Image 1 (spheres, rainbow, N blue to C red):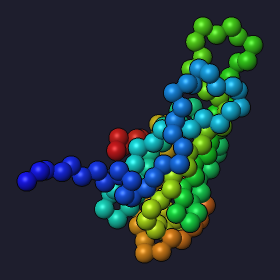
Image 2 (cartoon, helix red, strand yellow):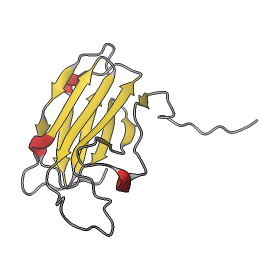
Image 3 (cartoon, one colour):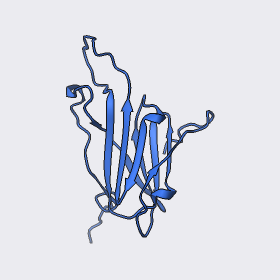
Image 4 (cartoon, rainbow, N blue to C red):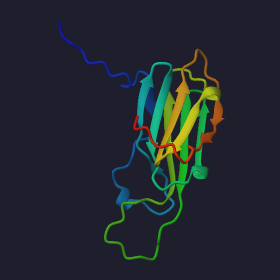
Length: 147
């Protein structure tokens, strides 16, 4: 008998639409950067975490349509008239799309942004209920729980 390793996100629960580009230094100002994510199954929810350091909460947009989660953000700033020795920090738009292979109830979703980490929890459902998701700001005493 052969033991098999189970990969809960090996394509069974969701599929990622775009992958992060390793060539950050070659990106042009204003070009959309695809951000990495962590995703896991938390019993009744699908949970997605995306690092967005330096992004303001009001510059984050979250949308869940029929079996697709779309995360958009914009990092403002950046000096364009410097002679950089290295320039791996990207300013401008960020985006990540995830194709969900199971229905979720986006109307009951929870989104939070703390310490530069966006966390989106999508309750599993029998039928997808699309929605734009509102980002909730943590209170000043709340911190990142390190999920």
